[in-house]
Length: 499
Image 1 (cartoon, one colour):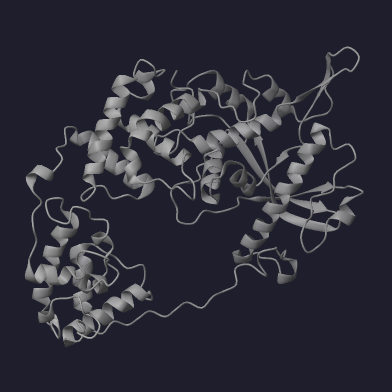
Image 2 (cartoon, rainbow, N blue to C red; image 1 turned 45 degrees about the vertical axis):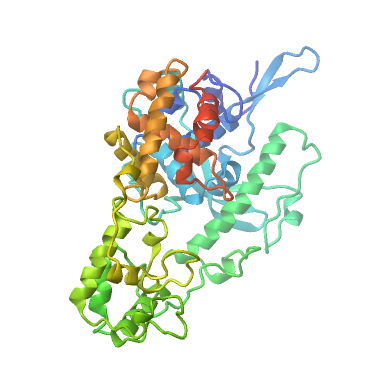
């Protein structure tokens, strides 16, 4: 069998004993690919599986004998050109998720990444990304489960670049000065300066190589647009004449004037500070409508003009003209409110609404259809009321419940610690019951599903997999019957862990 001139990595990838389906993930990858938190790196596994597929050579058969006569690679250049946008559209993840997953694969020496300047006709485009798997390390994580999957050797050396949860993710690494020229008779006519068009195909587009070239051209378009827009903020930004104009933007990253901070009067500020200290609520900034509205509300309360009998017809008439200028009395009321807001021992039982209140809506919330219009008046007049002990759910597994609270807080930002702790208790009981009943049906149960963090982590991965913009994850899914009778078993079967 004769192979045409192809990337040597393609030949090495072709020797690995791996499923040839495009997004098939070997079972050993679930153990060898982990995030910094110790969970399976599903996003990284999908990106690596797609890359390995494109680097798997295609057999060329003889029309006469039907035997394999040669091999060819699926892409046209020496390396596979990809963009973060390509993986975002393919798998439905965000830019940050794809970028960090790619960084993890590179840090663990499973991929190499190179940024080049490419010429299309008479145009040059910078920061075009090319990726290539490190075949020997891909083979290693495929054939065996490693004790320490982080120590894989690299052709480029081990990197120590941090990929933690930074607020801002660097989009690019070092850019090479190599220029790759791609020439086509049709490219000069098909690509315009206003927006790169990738619709010109050769007359032999039925072949696999030409189809791969078209996919590359689509992703180059998206990556180039994003690269040019991001480069405006860098020190070496090109002049405006070289920035590509996109379909949705005139010019990206136009500077916008920052709204000035609201200056809270000195006499009102101690009341606002006491609110933040006792309730734990923080403002996103001092130039927000919430902050200015709360400062103004405190000023009206101190002057006795907040409760207006002409506007607030549904409050206690005794509070019309009510004036509060004593900071100690204000702090006493807030301490009562803190118990109402945070403790499961006190009403209301549902804390979802009360946790979102600001100072202004704490004093009076006209949007409340039923119930308390003013929790402030309730604290002053009625005080706080304890929940009956018969309504409190007992927690038979407090340590397990605490892990549910912590992991849901980390993944979804849900606060199940107080008002919704019953949700975490019911989730813990459901998970323990589910895994006890199905332990014999689950493969490698003692290795992958024995401990609470493993069981909770699999539930979280299932919720994230089934989530969409229309149906985001909700706390109620942690204990619902549909979750444990249908969704979780289907998820375990899908990942190959349950028969």
